[in-house]
Image 1 (cartoon, rainbow, N blue to C red):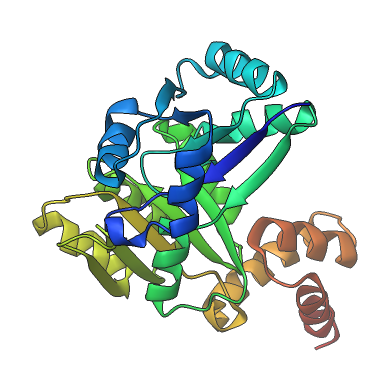
Image 2: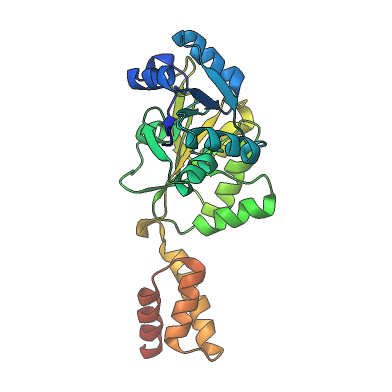
Length: 278
């Protein structure tokens, strides 16, 4: 009979956030798969737990994943941990979890700290619906393509960002999204924890002077109907009207302009029709 993979959330700063259940699981399993064994060893020393640590990270996920699943299939149990927070969230542990699921290995989540959720509730932005976008690509082309896909996203968006990239990311977001509300959190649960709530344009100006320190979570406001100013709508309507002048049907012109802008197709269609009837 195979063992179990336990997905164990660990503190993102304050060690007091580790649950008793997480501590007990790490004590009871046969071994622990860690993103960085040096980081996890410090946690185990704090907990006075002596346990075998196996390295599992971005660069050895295939080879190490095969070894870990073989041991679990042979009956051993493993606790999967990341450097901080919940394994699988912008973390190579996602691959091990998927591999175990494919092999019908029993998987149990030991929930706990997650920087994305902590920053969301601190943001004071609407969080009834949100989308997690993780880290943006270092490639300029891929980064802009990713942001471009999200420019009409209505849900609040969650991004992770490293200190050396945050200035560029904020500038790119302002370019693609326009000026929106954003909440920026860093060092959550640590001594220098900070959350600032401002607009993207203000954030860009702030980080021209502010030296970025720590890992960041960016919570960005989604687009809403109230953000569609009359001026913006008129520009889209003008484009749709040109499509009609080029020979498109009213419906096709409204559909194409809507897909390009995110404006309501029906709203555009009615406006074009009204203009022709005037």
